[in-house]
Length: 159
Image (cartoon, rainbow, N blue to C red; front, side):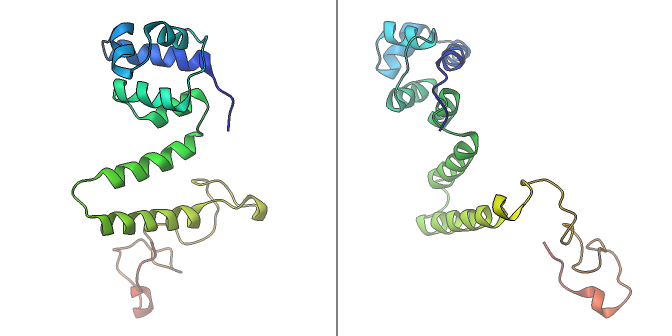
């Protein structure tokens, strides 16, 4: 966990407040904090708790995770994972069972793709030079959808 970066957090909050066209007093009222306290946060003089950041985020209609990252409370990668989970859980068009299945699949993909520093794995997205390129038939390198030269080339595509 990183140290609390209050200067950058305050500047970020001020920008968000201004783009939401809220006065300091309006945001303080909406977030349930005092006007002087919010002013001190914006000026980098105070370190708000995660609970206060959540209240401010709700008043600004932005994700609390965004403020946690700005404050150095949450790592960017953790935020991405948290936001993905939140979006899945908040979707009104899918039922609870479907949400749980999606979360299980998401977690299995994250585990499968996570680099293993002990094994010398490269970071995600870095070319490795191994494996079957996406969109090609396994073992052939032939792009999916191109005519084959033999019956063996008609194997299922690897994804």
